[in-house]
Length: 139
Image (cartoon, rainbow, N blue to C red):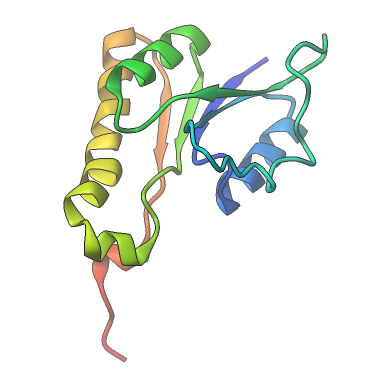
């Protein structure tokens, strides 16, 4: 059974991707941040108790700011595929705290790639992004 790791699993695209991969018989691991207001409403309908014998969806605590947590998760899961959908996506925050947004979005990607390299795994990596990074296009 193939294993996929998803950052941003609780977001719109991450939840749809998790549902698709589960329908294709993957084991799906999602990275979630520790937060006082954990919001998993988008994946509640596919959530499985990880102690169930046939569970295929697992949520793991980690953070794109923390390379050691990413290293630990990648070494533990040994994913065949990583789907990097996580970022700091709140537009106002990106203007108010641009260095924070850059650290999460840019360096978070570097941290994942470095964790893959250090693991020695031959993992496929998909990095989602946004058309917003190119700015507005002429009409």
